[in-house]
Image (cartoon, rainbow, N blue to C red; front, side, top):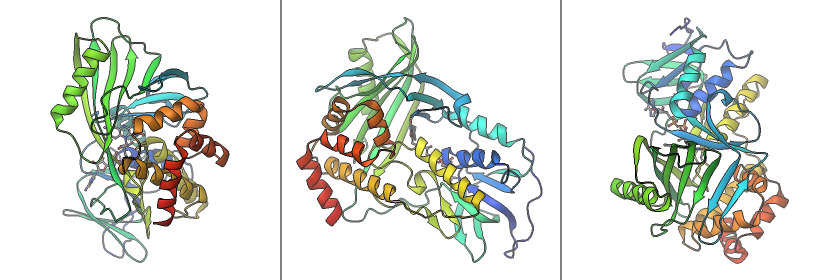
Length: 394
Ligand SMILES: Cc1cc2nc3c(=O)[nH]c(=O)nc-3n(C[C@H](O)[C@H](O)[C@H](O)COP(=O)(O)OP(=O)(O)OC[C@H]3O[C@@H](n4cnc5c(N)ncnc54)[C@H](O)[C@@H]3O)c2cc1C
């Protein structure tokens, strides 16, 4: 890997860079890609630090998008139709103008790292970050035996699990996914099962994804929104049972397994502390009520680059719209946490009574007040209104 000589002008005596990116996962590498595609920033001295080389296919990202995105070249599969299944309502829905897309983690890491290798001003380092400290004019990043400084540090490392204050919620979205291969052609690669709530809801909000990438291959994922994790055998048994008894598949092999936990919370992850800018889940970019993060990370990293270009550095600005969607997230978390309704009923109501464009705009925090009202009107108003008042005035 190339690297040019970093600045040696740090008053703290450490090697200095313009920017240090701590954590080379989704947020760190999305930001790096955007910085390197911006002509006025691509020559900055950039240090990227992660504790491990990113050479494992440790996650699969799925998200919806209207147009081609920054990572279009590495989209592994696309669906224009999705299926929503629940005891109350089931349908196959065309999601135009959106497309549901899948990206493999390893394709993403390889793509960005390969692109960055053309830039001698980018240095990668594999080591554990111990702390990040603000000083007057620069930020210090401390590793076990080395220290680096930069004007800005973009951080996606969560150093400490945040404490949950009274009145806030911290649910977990946890899931195990298997990529399975079958002998016989059993899947329809044009149709993604977005949410199948017909599975047992004994633990709380629970659903399956089935994302076929060919007639003989699909990612099947067992997902729950609850406060406690299950035993690993519980996820496995649920997947086995679903594949055999709902999908009717007995002859298959598991090519790949992934497990994930994403916070679903309304606690504040500070997005900025002096010149330390938090990004990714550390910056609060996992949507509180859905756990979706990939597209929020894309939005945020694009905004950061725009701010840097304009030299405005307005990283902390919270808009009215962001506050509005935070309130909606809190209301849904309130309803789920206090078990006023189960998630399968809420999502069934929403999918039954709204068109997919409105739903996706709402889930993307892009909907206008009229669209918000349409969504709100489709769920039991008295329960949600009461929860909203609690969230506003607690
Ligand atoms: C299995 C899985 C599947 C997911 N699927 C989806 C999906 O389909 N759609 C969606 O929208 N979201 C999804 N998410 C949620 C979210 O998009 C991902 O978690 C995403 O990777 C978050 O990006 P991030 O940069 O915040 O964290 P990460 O990608 O986890 O990056 C953080 C990086 O920091 C490094 N690190 C941590 N501690 C240190 C340290 N002390 N020193 C140095 N480096 C350190 C880690 O090695 C890691 O590379 C999924 C999450 C998981 C876990």
